Image (tube, rainbow, N blue to C red; front, side, top):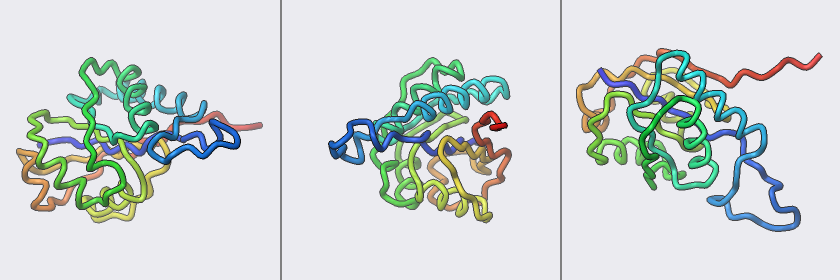
Length: 168
C-alpha cells in the first residue's frame, strides 16, 4: 500500500508589495502561512508521517510551504517540482504523479485549490474541502504510482488542519 499526503499550500500574502501586482505564481506566504507550514511539518514528525519524497507546485507559496514542512518534519531530501501541480486540474495531477517514476511509498504533494479539494474528493468518494495548510493523508490501494491512472478508491486516514490558538 502507498500513502499520499495531499497538502494545500499555507496562507499566501496578497499584500506583500502594496500597490504592486504580484503574478499569481510569485505570491509569497503570509506570516501565518509560514508558521502553519512549519507547525504542520512538526505534526507530521510527531505522528511518524515523514514523507519519503515531497513534490511541489512551482508556485512560490507552494514551494515555501513544502520547504517549511520539510524542515519541521525532519525530511532530508530535495523538494521535487512538478508543473502538473500548478492549477491544471485534478486529472493532470493524477497523470503527473503516475508519470514521475516515483518509487517511494509515502509521497507528499503540495499545491492548490480547487484542484486539491477535487482530487481528494475524487480519490476518496467523500466531499472534502482542503483549507490552507490542510493535509489529507490517504491510503492508496495500489503497489505503484503508475496505477493512479486507474483511479483507485483511497481511504482517508487523517485530515490534519493547522492548530490555531483560540482567541479569548
